[in-house]
Image (cartoon, rainbow, N blue to C red; front, side, top):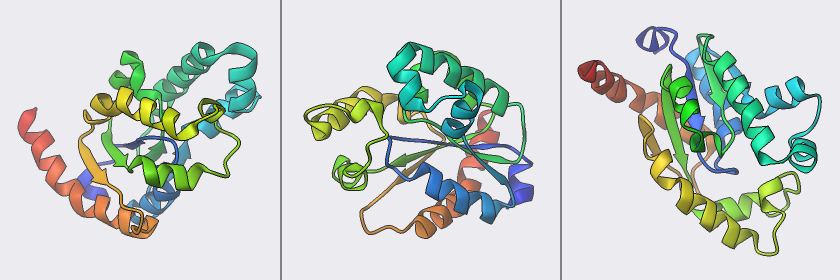
Length: 182
């Protein structure tokens, strides 16, 4: 599989709570790649948590740092990169994502709500009705997520191991399509 990808990075996109970090670790292991969580890198670069960046500087400042980090990460090879859920909203980020294989982890809102109900670290969920917020965010981003090379639908019963294996199994089908388009 590693040879098939020829060192091309794999970018995991999708909503918060879709499992990008958990699946990303497993996928990197299966591919013999390194794993990187862009949110962790953003916090290292900024010297602040994402919550602090949002609170002190706002979402626009966060998105600027996110684009800078993505730009730098896309220049490496053999990485599985878990991106932030909103990475798809800035057009410039697509130029970086297209340096690799883009995989959308598509979990239904009900699954996201269940996974995120105890999570207090998500700035965009600090609303009176987090479920409504998740629905709105997903509707705004769905068309952008659908631009991914590979669409992985996630069910509540799917384990991270099953999801990572499904991605590995489906990568060859996408690579043939990408090769035919170029």
